[in-house]
Length: 162
Image 1: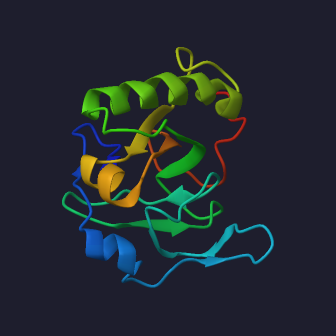
Image 2 (image 1 turned 120 degrees about the vertical axis):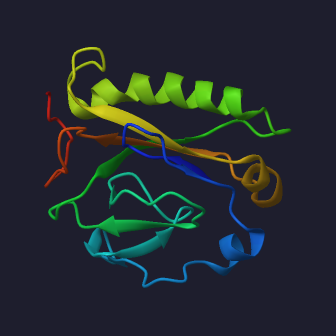
């Protein structure tokens, strides 16, 4: 999957190595509540294991198959606010994936934040499939993440209306 960072220069995390994606996490996985699946202790989760409501720390430049996740009560950079799957079939190309992410993530932004994307001081970015993950792993999922470009957050951005 491809992650686009939240700094002014986009951070691109390239295509996953198939073996790394199938092997799972090499770091300590985040601990999750057995009922709610909410992150209770920070750790590294595979990009295929993150979910709506997870809070993440920005990742450095380079290739990665994992995302650092933390409880949202702790200082974090991003929050996953929506996830959806693109229709199957052949790889549609990076532009089509980026367009689908923009259309859906912006449309869902107001429902999560509480005001429209045009009115907010907050930003969003997507985690998207790469051609390799689309083809080899049947990866169609796009994650929408919200963040405050001014500073890391503590607590959820849900309903922040700013």
